[in-house]
Image (tube, rainbow, N blue to C red; front, side, top):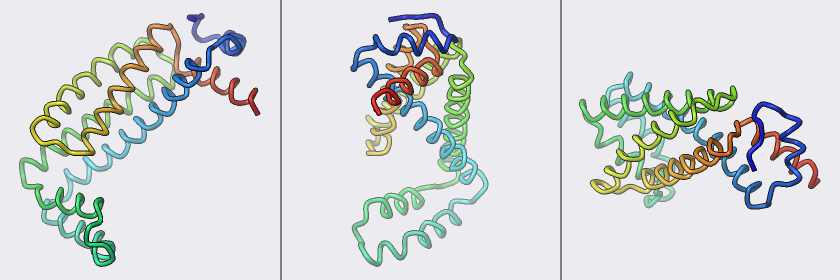
Length: 188
């Protein structure tokens, strides 16, 4: 299944012989990398906001944002989670959370950029960084389970597995993208 990296024509020619399961895994990998990049950007913005705004202002903002929704539906899950999270932010916890989010966001964006650029050397580093985050997230799930952390952990674990698969198969993100594009365009 492995083929030389960086050769777009080889990826396209090889596309015809890729089994459906592998095509779906490629698509999941590409979507996952996109979601990781988006998640990294959101964490970078969120971490910056947490670092700049004091916890009281964040709580006031959370009340303002959720007031209308909670007036319509007092049991709205997202609005209540936002208020609950903002209410529990205090000095050191806000600083830790902001630094964690900034570091996590920067690492994710750096990984995504390196994958987009086509560097296979980043794969082991990406896997190692995500495994470290997974370790901490699993600790958080054990100590204080949250649906958000569980979902983030599942997504990170899937990305680790798929990144390892791409690295093992000597493929770059561009190879996966070309192969997936050829498959999708050929089907339509």
